Image (cartoon, rainbow, N blue to C red):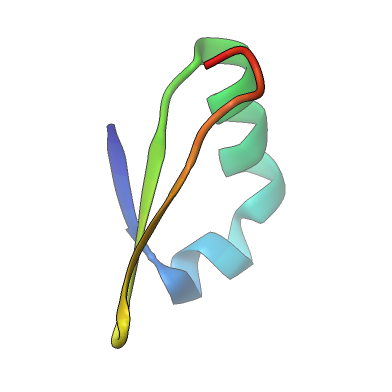
Length: 43
């Protein structure tokens, strides 16, 4: 699982989403109020 903060996620959103889709690599996004996880549709 890849960990990024929300600022870097916004900056690199296209690259990170492509990575999640192509390699089925979940992305953990950390924010001040909590965390979120992005998964590919296949997962």
